[in-house]
Length: 302
Ligand code: EPU
Image (cartoon, rainbow, N blue to C red; front, side, top):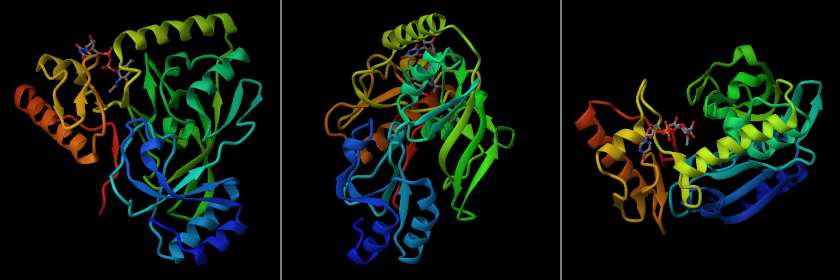
C-alpha cells in the first residue's frame, strides 16, 4: 500500500522514516512477499500518535518484526508496514537484568549477554529473528523458551492506543504461544538471566549450533518449523514417515533435511506455500488423525 503525501508531512514531524515501494521478499526469511511502503519508527514514544494518524487517515497497517516466521502475500500488499528502527545501543544491563530493545537481533542478544557472564539462553542461539518476534511467539529450542526469563515488557496496545508496561507474571507464556493480543507491538523487555561463566555459556552455544547444523536446512529460505508439534508428538517425524521430504508445490518444498521445514526453493508464491501446507496437513490428518497447527504466521488479505 502506498502512503499519500498528505499523511507523510505529519509522520515526518514524528520522526518516522518513510520507505516507498519496498520489496518485502527481501525482508522475510522465506523470501516471499509483495511490495508496500514501510514506516520505520525511530522513537517508541511516537508509535501511539503514528497509529492514531494511520487510523484517522483510514490507512490499514501491519507490524513486521524480523520477518523470520511470517508468510506474506504477493503483489501490492493492502497494508503499510510499520517497523521499529534498530536502536544503538539496543541493550542495557543492571545486575542480572538486561533491558533489550525489541528490534534487537535474538542471537546477538544471547552472545552480548554471554559476554557479561549472563546465560540461560544458549538454546536460542540459532533461532532467527528479533527479540520482539521471539517474545510474541515465546520462541524456544533445545529445552529453552524466552518466556522463562521475561520480567517486564513495554508494549504498545492497539486496544488502548497507549504504551504500557506489563510484569512478566501478567503474561502467559506457553509452547509457541503467548497472551499478547495480535495487535500488541512489543517495544522492549527486561530479561533476568542466571550468572554463568562466559566459557560455559560458549560451550553450550557450540553444542546447540552443532545440533542445529546437523538437523536443519540453515542455508535455505525457510520460516523454521512450519507446524507446531502436536502434544507429545513430532510434526517433522510424521511428515518424514509419510515420505514427503522433497514433496513440492511450485517452488515451495518440504526440506530434504528436516521435514517440518518448508523451503522456498526458487520463486515460491504465498499460494504455493499455502497449498503445500494444506496438502501435508491433510495427509497427516488422514494417516495419524492429527490436525497440525501452523507455527508460521500467515498474513491473509481480508
Ligand atoms: N525427525 C525425523 N525426520 C525429520 C525431522 C525430525 O524423523 O525430518 C525426528 C527426529 O529424529 C527426532 C524428532 O523427529 O527424533 C524431533 O526432531 P527435532 O529434534 O529436529 O525437533 P523438532 O521437534 O522437529 C523442535 C522445534 C524446533 C527446535 C528443535 C530443537 C517445534 C515445532 N520445533 O523441532 O524449533 O529448533 O525442536 O529444540 O517445536 C521452530 O520452532 O521454528 C523450530 C525450528
